[in-house]
Image (cartoon, rainbow, N blue to C red; front, top):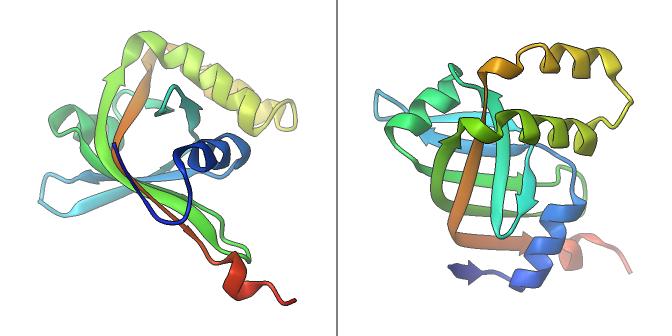
Length: 147
């Protein structure tokens, strides 16, 4: 894997573990234009796991072409984040497990109605696993924080 930017692999891993914002994934659309989707994610063993319905646009596009780009970034000052390129695959056997872990990570009992709605469709849930080839970190803290 290629790492670029100011952060080490360990710092990137820590960022992925600490930050609770959606990941944005760009898939190759059928028209040749990129298609973006925002998904909750879990970092695990150097890969990023998401969950979606098996008939969602993202799942259908990944099934046809697994090449992707992605970004996890903060939208508040100081701006920082990680973007990358890699491959995405579907794993229907882990759909329920990943969805339950995502619910714990992102809403942990704060939105029981949303959790209940998401869990009603477990039979058609699939996991997406993103395996990065390149990670590029950026951090504008030094430029944006007054001293």
